[in-house]
Image (cartoon, rainbow, N blue to C red; front, side, top):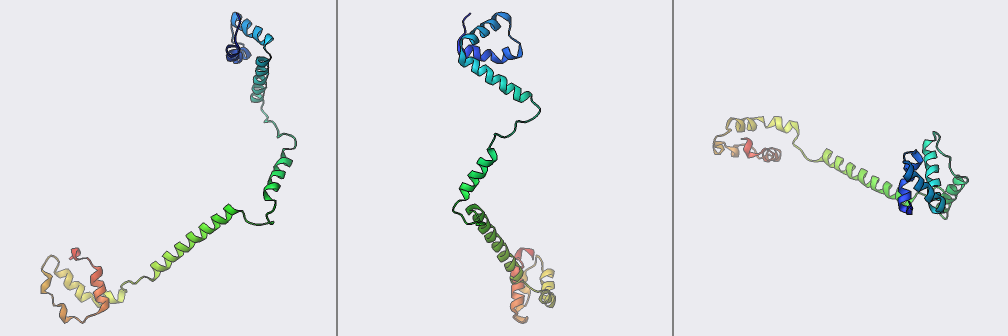
Length: 164
């Protein structure tokens, strides 16, 4: 039985494991005797299987460290020693911008105008009137009698009408 290369190559793993029956095994072995390309693939498969069966990982190729060092040196050629890389510089700029934005928001939150507790306490009588009139017609309140106070107006504006 004459096999084509594709057919024989499909059977190489089973041949290596000893799983081929006699007529098929003989045909694959006969093909390997006459085909140097398939023998080369069989040898490559055997070396890969041997590497996987090995408990120790293979070492780096000779001269690997020198080639890596030369590649790094070539990349750094023309750049002053200690000069930041462009990507590192970009990351630094973005981080500084983000930190500045957070600082600005923090300063704004800390210094934004608010109604101090003293002003709320000083105007509790007005707030009590508003609380007493909850759900009633507030037009009966005489706000004209109350001295116009910008802080009180701000307090009343900050209170939503739906609460009363």
